[in-house]
Image (cartoon, rainbow, N blue to C red):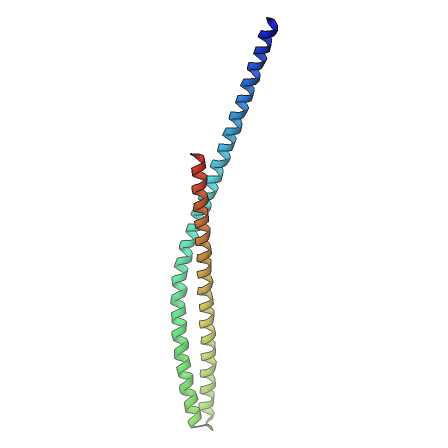
Length: 149
């Protein structure tokens, strides 16, 4: 009788210990999942803020590109006029210098326009990349939240 009582007491204590350990493991998993959710949410908010700033920057770059292209076109037209004047009077040093300056200005303006286009394209690619990251994070967050429930 004492052996049965002792055996049943030991069995009961072992059951309680095992049950409490499984509860600790479950609460640990829940805490880890909640921590993962918080990190994903933080990353999502950060990426959305970056996206906002990039979109503002994109509008600025587009305005700069338009201005740069207009300037480049104006200087190209002036270069053509200077070249036409030089062609009419090929011996004129003054027309030669003006044509050279106009060509140099047109070349520099075209380079600035190309750089502005490159900057705008870079920002557009950054925005696309960030939008993809946001989309992935939202999907991951949905998955984590559905597992929690």
